[in-house]
Structures are given as structure tokens and as C-alpha cells.
Length: 64
Image 1 (tube, rainbow, N blue to C red):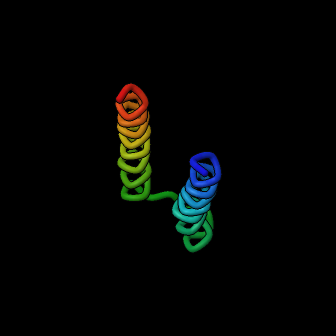
Image 2: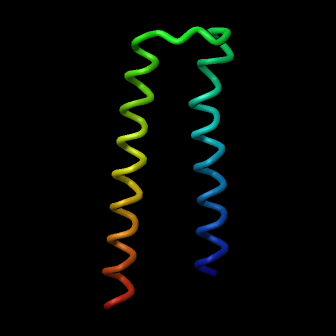
């Protein structure tokens, strides 16, 4: 059950990230502004931080 939930969550997050990345590029017709680059940098930091947090909480739960 955990594996199925992880797959569904991963697919959902992939769709959300693709929409966040491609949405502005389609709307702006490929034009990249400084605020869009800033948004992508913040998004990348949040994704990396979320993955680290998720990995650490998974390790703590498995040792309990």
C-alpha cells in the first residue's frame, strides 16, 4: 500500500511541477523574465528541501 501511495504522490508532484514550469513558458511564448528565473530558483530550493525532509522523516519512521 505504501508503494502505491508513493507512486501516486510522485506522479501527482511530477504533473504539478511540469505545469508550473511549462505553464508560464507557454503563456509567455518562451520569454523568460527575471521574476520567472527567481520563481524557478525558489521552486528548485523548495523541491530539494522537501525531498531531504521526506527522506529524513522516512528514515526516522523506519527505525521506530
